[in-house]
Image (cartoon, rainbow, N blue to C red; front, side, top):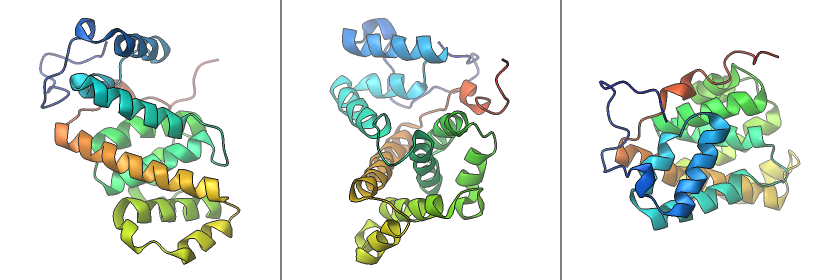
Length: 199
């Protein structure tokens, strides 16, 4: 499932169930992900410690990250990487950084966004999106109408603004769970999207 040596630390500080012991719906989803990516992201196994919460988590994840709308899939991943870096979540920065590189077809962008999105190769619209996402992730109590006006000035609709905020809020939860569990990123994530795929 993953390329971890016997010396590699565990993927969670909580018990991690065996794939064969999981409920059928969860096992089927994990096998589908493994078939597509070539490995099982550790988040799928670590959170399966509590199956009911696993189902709720991934249902909300998919509703936010797989939908159509005014945000591209790469922009959704930018939100995850920037806010996860601010929340000091190694798992989400590494895993979603890999997805961002692939979605943006840009091997540099994830590192730029994680370190300092204000200096990253982004459009003014994307920087405004991340400004708002960071407010939601770190200081949601201070959000006011000027924040919404700034986004509308860049062409974001009300639904887009909801998406930006909801992704930042959901991944604030994800960041905290990953840190709580000491969730370890898969080694495979570190190299994904850094070199062009052979044709």
